[in-house]
Image (tube, rainbow, N blue to C red; front, side):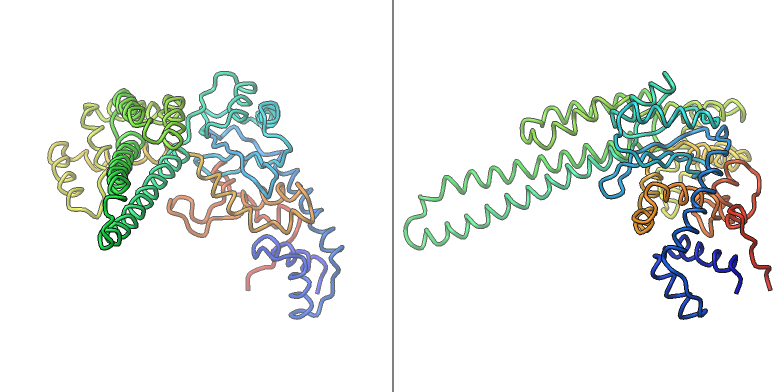
Length: 417
């Protein structure tokens, strides 16, 4: 059994199967009768990580049009991450000690040396991240991340719902105590407390329902891709913020942080809507269709394709727009798919990295370079976007095929039988 074959096997188990060094040793010993030490495996993986880091630094990043940025954590260590929205190519994956403006700015400037110059980025409200982008790239737009806003809204709504249950439990307990007190001829002792408990429950229930409705409008009507134009979204956004402010005194610790966050992030969070409006206007001009009807096609996608309402509206629009309708739907759908609203793809990357904690213990931050290389050059076996299947993120970014990731690391693959 050749040394090259064993090295291929080691890297395959480590990266594809997420196998630890001890698992690799056991597999080689029990299945192939090959004995290796942890030190030998470590040396091979370090060499692969060094080659991978060199390949990462040589990649031309000029094809990235929309960058998704976020700060993820591996244990207590912050990791700066950047992903191309279209291809999922990871162009930044760097462990750091600080996640301040200077740190972000330095790493973004390094990426710019490789040609990174996106039209805009999408990120959460992290102060260091946004300040670092301004320091590195000036006034390049950084749109707000819809995912984190929705997550915050859902968290507040869930807390208020739990408070309702708590008020209900207290009211029910007092009612039981009241029944017992009445039997003892002492019902008046608890009447005031029970009255206050019932009033608090009604108030909490109404507040929870109102906030759930408002945050539901925000998610479904304002932050949805298939929504109104950006001016209408701003008006709806401001209305929701105003309504939250009117209820803020009822639960200030819960509602105020959400209201303030929404108020500060409005224009950033609605950045995607401005981009989508421009794309729909371009489609209307190219197809010679009034913008109103292009937007109606966009709003069609608010309905579930499995619903009767979707197909009823489909037939109405088809009858109105004629033979060009199907092509118009395809254009609008493509425009929506190519308008990212969140950096959740980076959150997905974080979940994938968690399986490689064992490499971090052995390699330190060098493991991030190896994983960045592997994830960028490994082909998609399946994807919700069919154009990605059978291609790697690098191939999607550059439009060019490349050798297998093992061959890029200097190994010759086994010929198929």
